[in-house]
Image (tube, rainbow, N blue to C red; front, top):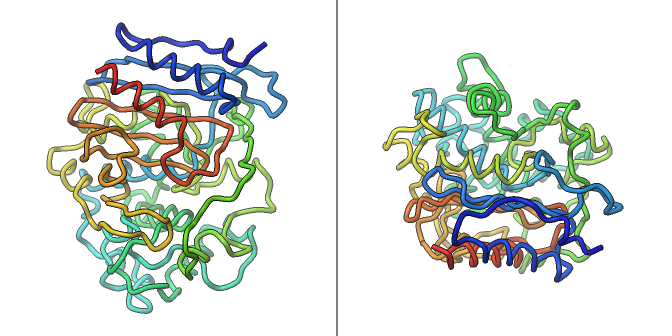
Amino acid sequence: MKESTNISGTTANGFAPVRDAFVANFTDGLEAGAGFCAYKDGELIVDLIGGTRDRRGEAAWQDDTLVPVFSTTKAVAALVIAWLVEQGRLDYKQTVASLWPDFAQHGKGELTIAQVLSHQGGLSGITEPMQPEDWFDWDGICARLAAQKPIWPPGTKSGYHPLTFGFLAGEIVRLADAQNRTLGTILREDICAPHHIDFFIGTPVREHERCADLHKPKAMADFGDINPATQAAFLRPWSSPGRRGTEAWRTAEFAGANGHGTAKSIARLMQLALDGCIGTAQYFSTATLSALSQERISGQDLVLPFDLSLAAGLMINTPNHFYGPNPGTLGHSGWGGSCTFADRDTGITCAYVMNKQSHALLGDARPSRLIAALYGCL
């Protein structure tokens, strides 16, 4: 039986070509299990799931199957930061050191929150040798980042921070919150739980049985010219967490890298980047939305082999147009192929998740096909 026969879900009138594209990804052998969801002006227009969630390819993907989305998590983390900005707990223009004095070491004292969120901090990875399991020591990693000399002059270029982003954003949030809550706790208590949104940064053990197994890519990603920033980010023996097992990884809060959710949950959360609302609940003012989406830096990234335009934790669609045709669309992608975006020009929020990972760093062919089909129906 072909995996495509497991496909279920709904498409609004006029959006059948999106389902056809979703089926095609399976019939072409590109998927194991996946979900794709889109809203327009808050109304659900596409909600599709298909395939299998286990390594053996026997357990069908369900509506509530949780899947790790890696750096797509950064989009959600950026929304939590924006929520604290809205409450007056943070300002994008303030320095990180104003909250976290130890961070000022080695010339980092003038770095603003906006610069750190747009990958300008010079801390794309940990430079001093450590063990992969050290990533599970929150205080230890934060101390290392505070004490570390930047890999390039901070504030001059972007250099993508795959893992350290989550610790920097997470520590900023914890220090700013009145109750010193973690980023994942604020997300759950203030945003997800009130609206029954099924997304976690720090996934409780009770939820692990519905998590999808990953099929890891068979080829290495193409990082282009390797430099010290790339090496620290991806290529050191300690660049990724390890040796603690899957349960510890799912449960930990890596706020830029290990969010677990469904396509529907992420597409709903991205409505915050669209108009500041979830349903009728208003979270962000026009001023906060403007600050969240403002371009903070653009140009050739030092870590990823792309020209990037970066806002405060989100990618701006120009110049690569990974997230449809409109240049101002805000989005993010994750290792293996997941992605999400919010397009204010059309009122679209969208997310794609999967468990068969590709080696594409950005612009995976599967969501690209689905996004093209979606916009073709508008």
